[in-house]
Length: 325
Image (cartoon, rainbow, N blue to C red):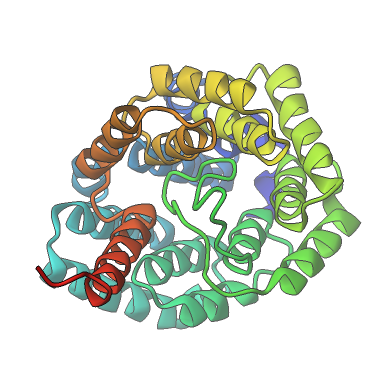
């Protein structure tokens, strides 16, 4: 889809920033002449934006009869995420198999969007190495490169999934391959230094490196917020995480509360609010309220799984040293 890069520059940026409704409005109302390839790619961004909003049924219904590989893959992603949200393991496993079969078709091995969807599904299934293998052969597709880089990063206790807030993947890979992530950023900057996604890649890795890089990440997200007028949940979370890293907790909380006004069910925003609440010694009832809100919104969130595991380990350890009455 390289031929449609210039035609969809604004659309790509809207998607990268998480401005999903603006993108939907733009694609739905635009009368600008587009090439056939650009039209198909614009539709892909449209339906992926609906998925980001959790409107799975709409995507599943409208793409039911599509024979276009990219749209078929997007429909499978919607089916998978819907099954996951409902705890439907049978349908989830069936969809993983269908995605794998779609990827195996000869024409899809080099199809970047099919790769992206397959990698997303495999990652969500916990098949981390398989996801990386799928996304490894990304060439110069920035979006696939972005996903590959994020999967190479370490799980961050500071922010377990909300660096720049990703609507599909809300947690990072639990393997320490920062070296690969840095290589991806260096390669991307060689041929797309000014591209927004390349800057996002750099910001994520800067947050992982730490030290002086925290400020560099902060400035990148700050520039997005100012130059693109992007008051989106994704950008606000990126700014907030940078502020958390710099120990600017009041500023981080303010940004997160602003993000919560835009979408009060966004899991990454809630997780980051839990982090800030702990760092600022908020009352336990405030922290528990956020935790309960996260359980209602995303009961399978990685943060909750980690929290429950540690609570269980603590209870077991406490029981060993309990004084018999």
